[in-house]
Image (cartoon, rainbow, N blue to C red; front, side):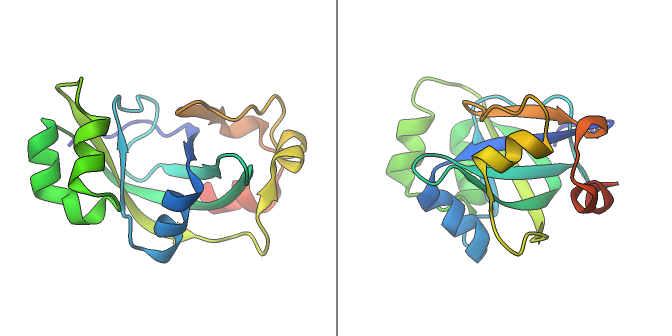
Length: 151
């Protein structure tokens, strides 16, 4: 497990629609990455941005842990929680020696409706969808119920 961080920032990740659906259903509780987020950790929060053609935020989750492992060990420990097949996993990590798994603890489905990209830009000044992930300084968020949830 990677050590606890300050969690001053909100992690936002881009997820393909088919995987975002699995996250919301609880079928995918480990989000895979090739590099670990450095400014959030256990008990931080992660905002799920669903990529094109959806272009919306569907939910926010609390981070239980962030794991760093050799890809084969990560699959052995968490494969059934990744929401993908072993072949998809191997294809994703074929050129890397380190695999990172972000364990999602609980969904905080604070949104009655998803938040569309145009609205996100009003709620979070300067927001741009990340390629993989990025951070949002909690001090610039203009959505009070989001701020209350993660503070």
